[in-house]
Amino acid sequence: MEKPKLSFWQIWNMSFGFLGIQMGFALQIGNTSRIFQTLSADVSDLPFYWLAGPITGLLIQPIIGYFSDRTWHPKLGRRRPYFLIGAIMATLALFVMPNSPTLWIAVGMLWIMDASFNVSMEPFRAFVGDVLPAEQRTAGFAMQGFFIGTGAVIASMLPWIFTNWLGISNTAPEGIIPDSVKWSFYIGAVAFLGAVLWTVLKAEEYPPENMEEFLAEKEASSGVLEVFKEIFGGIFKMPKTMIQLAVVQFFSWLALFAMWIYTTPAITEFIYGSTDTTTTAYNEGADWVNVCFAVYNGVAALIAFALPVLAKHTSRKITHMVALICGGIGMASMYFVTDPICLLISMVGVGIAWASILSMPYAILVGSLPEKKMGYFVGVFNLFIVFPQIVAAIILGYVLQQFFDNQTNFAFVIGGISMFIAAALCLIVDDKD
Image 1: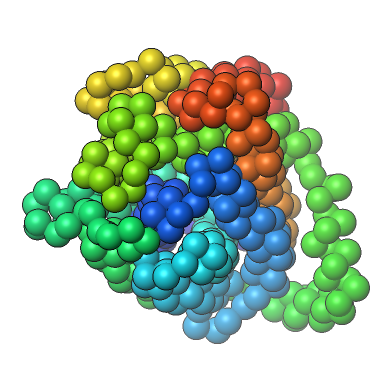
Image 2: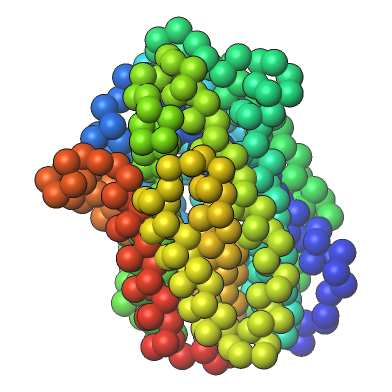
């Protein structure tokens, strides 16, 4: 079927749900280490507690992709049922997470929260490939990047806004999550559900061209053994472009995960001079981390629409390479910063890379995928976001402890080098639809 071009507002509506999804992710990324440390987690153990997210993604992504390819609901379509189910689960998890009474409940809630985010998020990538013609896909992923950046800016700023504008306390007794963090999660929960509902109600999907053939194929692959073989056997049948991009993704996300785990402990210790989660200094530092994350996401939102223009005049892989170099410079420079304000300059480079990571690999990828397995292969591709996170969680703590005297700010150097490697690997990618 030849897909018609969609208007700006149609692409807006189909992407709007990412605003809420990324508000949830931003709250998780910016506050999970803070919550774990408040509940008495040792800084050297943080990577292991963060393993919940990538392991959940490892299991959820290809499964959701596989089943969403084989779903058709007369009112909700193919991908939108998963948007909605994930949003309801995520909303509940976001309300519970900041009220966790113990560390292990918080870790468990991270598992549930991340699983819910993945159920909603994974089909959104395939949604662009389903609905948009090839010439609009880069713009579609750029629009998703815009909403991801915007949602993350809002969510990352919430703890700071509640404290500095509304006078809600950002400190609490030992073992208690501050009220500013709790209210941020409550707002994020409502926004998550509301934004996803907007897309569910406003966007449309195309039914299978041949419904009888679609139902017959679905029935033929409905056995447990067939499902298992399809989900896990297909990993060894990835298109060449997908394999090349997977290597780039691995090093890009290794860098990001290093930053997300260690920015709060590093900034609070080396710039604000405190590791005590009950002190004003620690919590001011933790709030400033959220501001920094808001800045890089804001940059990503602004840069998102410039990337397709640059890609048109060069290529998508060259655009991605340049953006990753900017990210490597920004991330490595964080090691040398002693003034909190100067961190915002570093965040500009990180934001340029983040904008491209959210759009360019997917724009390159979907042109190399078979239409009938779009959701599945996007889910498999996202495993290469998961694998580096697991690697980071397993080795980063050990590396920092054994070679850098547990100085967490060296994670920024490791992240910067990893981003440069990803940039160099862009040159091997076959960028053709």
